[in-house]
Image 1 (cartoon, rainbow, N blue to C red):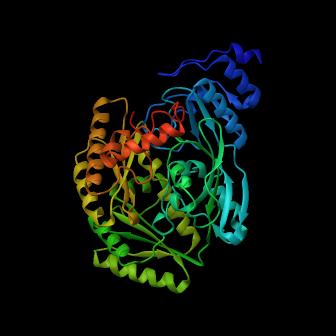
Image 2 (image 1 turned 135 degrees about the vertical axis):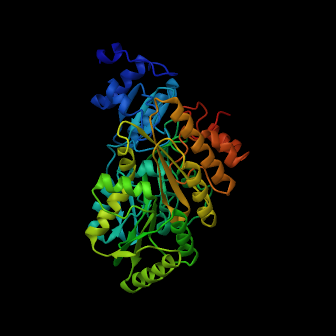
Image 3 (image 1 turned 45 degrees about the horizontal axis):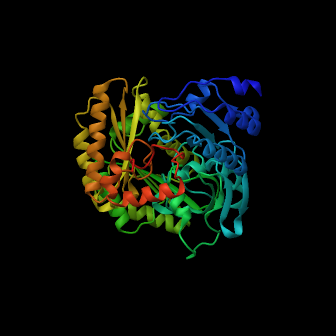
Length: 473
């Protein structure tokens, strides 16, 4: 006990050292699951993008909703900031402890609480990953489709309203979370809804907390939708001469109502990086990767229609594959894109940004973006979940070089203003974090005041992930 009372930890920039009395209570609650070492704190103060590390003053490894509640009650009583942490895969500075405080790590909350195959839903703790849940579901003939890539936790995916490669058919976390258990700023435990597939009873708190990025409460459990594993799954690799032709073909596929499960775009640079990183040999030209789900007959029909439409837009080839190994290789390569792009300049960091626009504006938005990045002084890749109008830039920069930061910031700024000007959004799935706060008023106008009022009502002391999502009121 005495080691807690006497141990001094450095102030976080803009923050403060935690009160000794609070540390004593945290140690009594968590024992060795309270971490104060610098290396562990720094690990919890960064995601996977260029944002600088901002370490919390302590890391609390929670294992239950009740422990999260107790931690938040202590933080509330002492006015200490709280930053939730899942797998640390965020890209917009979500987990940086901008004002110091306590990081609540939920990665040990890995229990699959219930699988109800007859109702097509499952309840899990927030630290369960998509891969873990699908392993648990293997014998049921069901799966959870939301696939943002990486080993993201479901709690983190809900907090950032994640989506990923399957969203064009199965939707995003917004559509696939039925209810959640959430701990509020003062430590109260609430449930946001029931397992009913629809309800008109009161405000939709589930949708309020999905995408709130830990600023309104900490998600500790969630109930998600499940789907039957398709009878037939087939993939296709379709190269084009230009990005514009590839994107135009996707627009035609979507507008014709072909229910593709996935459709991903890689530009030439992304294919080059992926070939090098994964040891593959795809043609190094703008390429679409499709996946089709359904019965043998419907999948064959989807493939035939897609092949015809892509040919109309100048596809150079259409190579389809139904065997699991080929499909697994394809999607492993797609999920490795972030690391493949970074490997093109190993000493650098990836400034990863994304936007989403109405599908009819996608071709123009990507074409204008291509023209904008053509003269960039560093490697820039375009990749996207183009079936729902969402695409990403990976700008491989050295954050220690001010000129590169300024250039990347200009590209990012123009990209976002271009997308919002086309009635799109500044982020389709990465979230706001601290990185995109400056665009919230541009996109939402006076609606930001309503969001600030909600934040003030649920977190009046502003202890929940402060400095994220919303500009200062």
